[in-house]
Image 1 (cartoon, rainbow, N blue to C red):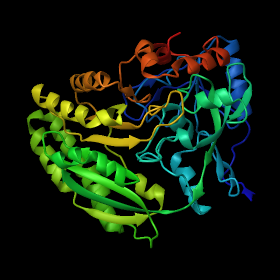
Image 2: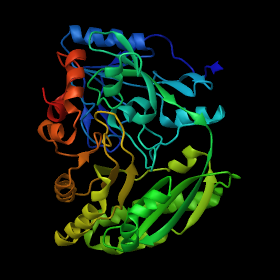
Image 3: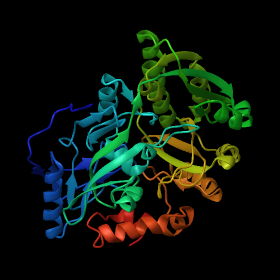
Image 4: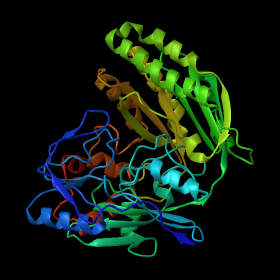
Length: 447
């Protein structure tokens, strides 16, 4: 059966002029116009009007990207009113959701229908369109990227048309737009594959760096979802293995979850980061404390409550996707560079995996992938660390996450992505005058 849920705002866009900042506070946009449309038709009218006035157009999500991908001095489209789940089709196994809805709203609604996404990233605050456009992914042996779970898209193109695409309808647009960087149009709705809700058993435990890196291949092969965090300046890693379970559900207790996820992972960790920023010499000692603070725990719950966790400590991030077989070599090189350059790194390094997919600009396009993500607490100097990490990752053929800090340009990326020209051809057809262009897209896609 097909059912509808969610609320729809009045069919009218609001227009204002205001400053927009991202979650981390490192990106600011001062558009000439800001609109908050409620329907695809509102978006189409706003795009057509802006294009007629010679304004560039960008849509923003919740601001969880660290790049300037959504910055414009023309028309900024806000997602606030383009929300709600349009339809849930249990027979087809799909859910269609307005692009401004957050992943939290989507997953909570799916759960009420007894459905779930197969996989997702580790936070739920992004809008659907933002997550799709930047290639958000989780970790998984067989499934990972949000893009691979998309079944159809609704897109407003540069001429103000509303275009729908899927594997059967406008398939070339569909292939490219699943990770579109905001370069092909404004996404107004997404249809995802959904499956009957299942349970995941999470096992989190400390593990020495040497063991994790030596057994990385085995750990990724034996678990449906495996990831780990390494604390620089230490031998400490926290590993997480998620596998499907027949049940019964055994969720985290309220007090235990608060202690681990709020007090230790957010409250005390924020205090440690602030101290490390003020007194860098304390960072190695604080890292040892942080690496030993979290103990082993196991729990079983519905997927979105296992995949995700609260992230309240604000930071900057760079992440690279590497061929999976190169990941541990690169991680060892990163560790050596941190010590050689005498960097003081208080944030753990995150390692995840994804299977190869068929999306032209997905970071896992055409190859089994491992992700290495580096972070720095907001306000802490990050350039030396990120530059060192980027040199290592690019030497291994790394592809930067589209929504995270990097310095790569179109010349590099055209070599890193075998289907780069295919994406560029779709862009040239849909947006020949670069209505959706900005400085970031000029750098990573060229003109």
